[in-house]
Length: 364
Ligand SMILES: *Cc1c(COP(=O)(O)O)cnc(C)c1O
Image (cartoon, rainbow, N blue to C red; front, side, top):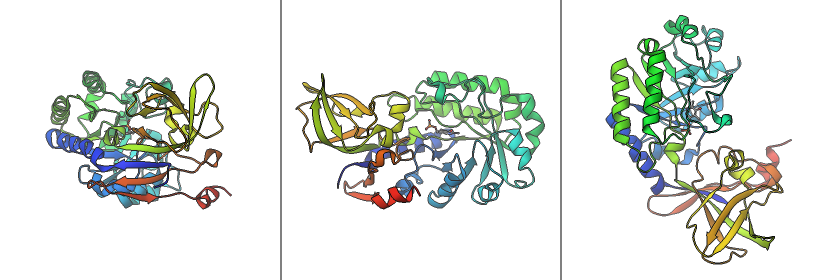
């Protein structure tokens, strides 16, 4: 297979799925895949054996979830347009409005549908202002219980999403406690509560048993069905971006240019100023791995190798599933990485490739 391509490895996806299944069983919570993080539907059949359905951020994600992922389809968006709402309702089991304003606007259209509101508890674990739902003046959800209260009879659930790659159970526990304190009287009037994504419970060493106990207690004390919406936690470490070295040069450091680009293929590395991960990152040779777009700062990071790199060498950028394939773009006309799946028996198959025609068709 020609590089560049994303390689989704089912044997590395499986441990995450098994942890999700364990958590469901031991907590009673349901788990919905957040499509905005990962929407590579070729592996949805496998994932749907371990998860209950999908949640979304737009009409198109609602439709993709309904079409490709067996199970429940939750429809959430920061704002629905008038011309979208009928299709949203036709393709979802629940609709979650971001504001009481949207609920009012679509009250008659959505009558008889299971409805909820996003609630913003005003606390989060995000280190980045850009990704912090509780940032000052946040538009993400209603934050005032007295504003929500008059609408409580029109809805049966709330969605909270305030965690961000939170690997600290005690912090999650404390935030859930503060949510109960502030919104408990409203929560107890609901049938279901989604606690969103961003809980890194598939990570190594995470106390899954304590999380299960806490979720079960929350569900029991408030008499609600709990939902989780894992994105990153569902697919973490399952995928690599396979690239090849095209050229090398020296400018105070050893530089290797590869047939990919962070701006086009791993955009979050650029947005959050993070380094890619390479394995094994060991050896006497130190090299900066650079993208082939003309953006000066298109750099995957600096890594160690056993030998000097040369054109034709293959590299595997690790942990490349989340917020990558859903964000890839045609900047510089750089060829989009194909998408391949490694089956549990080790065989690899390409499930999507991109051509010049796709590039041209994305513009007019
Ligand atoms: C982004 C998002 C998720 C998934 O977040 P991860 O950090 O990828 O787990 C879940 N729910 C909502 C509402 C989101 O906006």
